[in-house]
Length: 503
Image (cartoon, rainbow, N blue to C red; front, side, top):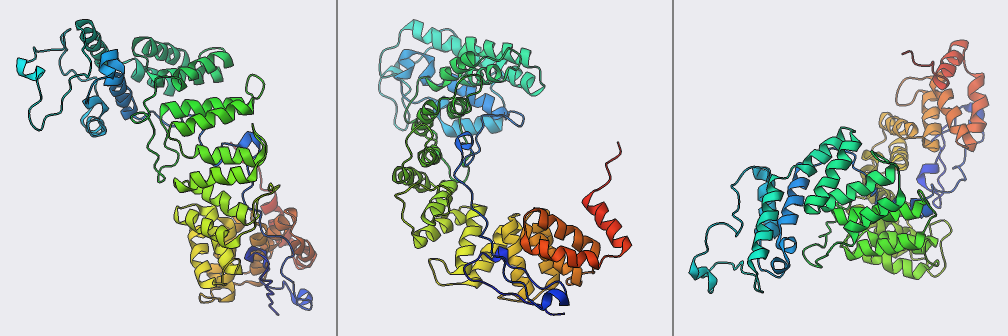
């Protein structure tokens, strides 16, 4: 039985058919499928503008106890205790090392002793003068009155004893939203927890424990967004290794932006969403530049402007945001549907951005970089390097990479020929609904390559590939059907129309 693979170097490897189905088809060997390479990720539509960052403002797992500790530390910090405390010097409550220690040590709810109204034990006279060598002065830079100290001490006592935030999150996780709302309101009234205001905004937005009210939700979220902000202490320290890590202020900003973008409960306001993304950027959320760039590409809240979008994306990429690197690669590769003018085709730069995003762990960029090396786009063709990247993406579940890698093993290019491995990879990609892999798997099943021959399974996979618009599958299906036994037909129909589950 003849086998034939004709490779067109201008096509993606995912489009290759691995062999002819039978001697009937082998008389006219199948060409590489004349379909374009799989389209890269599209620039998000207006309602998908948060897609690249995947921040929804939703809590999908139980609250981390350390978040409550952090909330208490914040309200006890010198920035919140009093006006003179805000002007003061060092406070352990502002120290990241202290916070990390407390997270490991236990809860602030433990009783460490009450503070006296005037701040505890009397201060030795010597402490009013210059601090001893090696000591850090905690003396405020402005004079504090007794009422200031009493206010700070009282707030400290309340915060250490207060359990409203813990109880609110417990009730929320248990689905008792009425109780959660009451406890969040209590925490806000007592100590002004930003976390409480954030969750109250979400409860009002979704109508949990209270009638849905977008105006009330906006009011609560703005309490967090417009709270006093210290440009150093309160700004998020963005970590490219944890791109979705946010604080309460940014969570509220993104949630409100998403609300304006979707128009939930009122008219859409993309201009306000764009303003809030810029505010999130001011708060230290570097991926907001990716959102702004996407908005500038698709005209969300602003005019379409390709060059400005590139500048925004470059800023996000410089901060280490991999989705921005991927999108820049696609823009310079001219792989973005409805791409705005003003962005030149630059394959070398596209490959550089794909490679950078791949190094940062972006699976789509890993596949894109592999494909450019495989086809020699913007660089000398290097299939031996492409295989490494295809494998990296394939083991992470990228179906296009799985199908591409399978062709290497089928043909024995760069790697030793191994039909069994090729078949396993085609099967993995086929289960991910990759149409070329469905057809290639059907071919191998029909000829018993890499495993047992199975005409029923071959027919089923070929049928599924045809349903995905695969032209070669449509041509091969009648040939396969003619070779099915009655038992094969019954099994194929059972595979395509599984019996309903019995409960």
